View 1 (cartoon, rainbow, N blue to C red):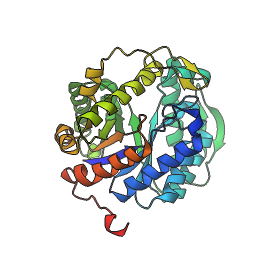
View 2: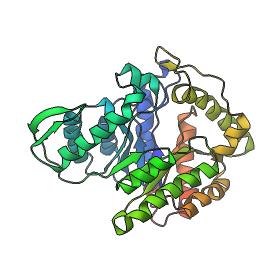
View 3: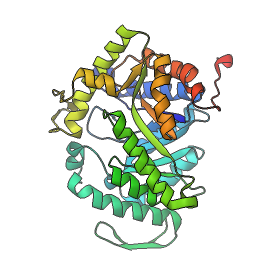
View 4: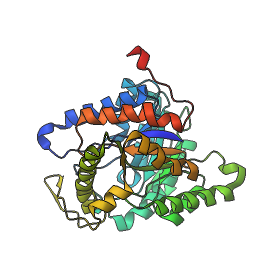
Length: 346
């Protein structure tokens, strides 16, 4: 099992400054690069202060300039918000500028608040996403592409420059049948149980395995990446403090994901959660390094290829960096045999 660090920019205090938020994310990427993480992940979102990244390809290029080996995943780029004729060219350039370390995770959008205000309501985003993905693949793989669809109509054109490598495409899906069908179509899968329980994770893995098995040899290369909050704490007191912070973070996340989407001046309002603090503690992976090894064992045994950990839910940057390093030194070696660190040179 490989490990990825989700650079989920969280901006709870405007006085902190967006420049400082993104400097923190770059510093986290550098530590992940140094301590053997497989990749870092960037999530595209607009108009809100959670997962705040309106320019994922630009940020991928910046991260590549500050790191040496770590892969960079857009987890995810929201295709319905982009014109594929422009996005395809930007993607090719980003692949070149990142020295071909880019992996393209794509999705339809998740938060009604931002999708409505950007003119692609969630009830229409699935249909537009499907057509956008077809257009994108055609533009990347063919020259002189024309299109007559519901959302795209254009005469023959060729995106330039032409791709010099194939960027892996990963589909972001949550539902079990969606995971199964996207796997059968030959896509890598990005998913998460969010704050769901262990059984939901197993069901998601089994849906992936079912689709992969039906592809046979053609599906052997496909991978399953799973994301959730994970943080290395030092003791019980520290653990409880981090769980309380994560619970508060999710009181905002739930507002825009499953709730009414109450946002004021870009700031998501915290709302009471249906889930208790105790349930949050049970479903998230916040614990000591030794406990983390035990908690991640079932993920590896289930067959997850990449565990994407979100450490940004309001914790001070110094503690976040400490958690990233501790995880790389004490947890990752139990699950992968190709972890390399540069501790001796720093």
